Amino acid sequence: MSHIIEPKSHLIDRVKLPFSYDVKRMREEYLAMQLPEFIYYSVLQLRAPAHLVDTSLPFPPPADDYADGSWTDWLNTPELEKSPYLKRIIEEFQAHTKVTLVRILRLEPGSEVKEHTDPTLALHIERSVIRLTIPIFRSEEVEFYLNNKPIPMKPGECWYLRLTDPHKIINSGSTERVNLTIDMIPNEWIRNIIEESI
Image (tube, rainbow, N blue to C red; front, side):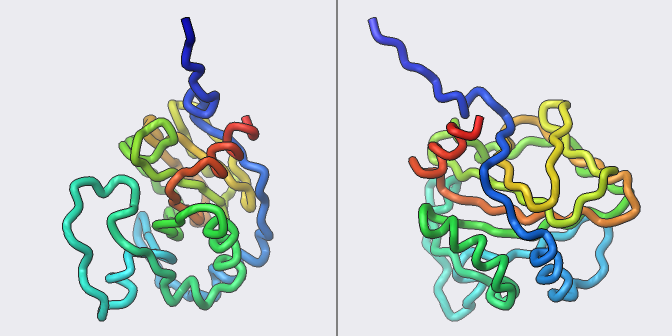
């Protein structure tokens, strides 16, 4: 009688991947964006559905399932095009798999993102996308909790997190927390990297 062996990546909720990035260059390009002040939480799209970037394009037809990002084409926004190092990071992943949504996520000092789940952001979900997280600005007073356990993410590191599980962020520091997040349709290439990094 044969048994199906579940991949280790389906059993682990966090994996630090073997990628690291130049924090100084990421910060320089982020600061060059000259983003306005914000209250609580701010999102900047660097890669978005094509019709939102180029308004001359038609809206995509309705889809039965939006979970995996294949319902539309995705384009770089002007902010990403003006950021050569961040763009290069994205292109390194695009060379291997389909990158969908890319964002800069900012959390105000003294703020908290309440515990929640993201139902389609995990490897074990059929027709899902996964999200990789690269911190740009993070003080020691920022904690990202996944399943009630903190994740020691450092600027320039790249992490896969199983975000279908409960997670929350607490910024107890005096500076904003800034992450780059990269959503992609998982394929054998990224699955193997995650599996080998456990």
